[in-house]
Image (cartoon, rainbow, N blue to C red):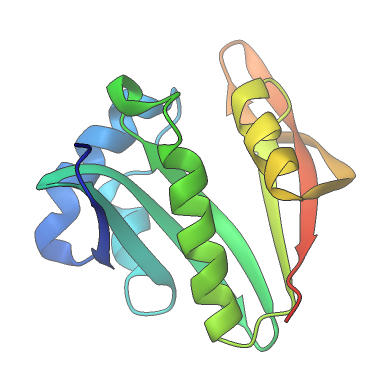
Length: 150
């Protein structure tokens, strides 16, 4: 029997565990100041598998638009559907907040994330040149959008 997934709001109390996942998952992770600046103004969620924290997501909502800012799954838990489950939860939360459109940027080299977003139904709508820091310079971002339907 697989362990159930659950979600709860990210708070300052959870920040150390969030940072461990963030630093393990990304070459250029968010730091504690960035997360703290998002707590009061954005929807920030933790994902648990059983009692183990396995991921987090941060989404900004302005009127009827959302901007998915961060989504991370512990590297040892990647590849088994948890990213999709977290994305589904975030989009459900956006829908409950009357969001009609969600946007995001993703590194052009992050093929796993690009596949996840496209599989969910996000469409590529543009690029941001030199958007992300990268080893040896900068990296382009793919801009994607998803229309949330009733």
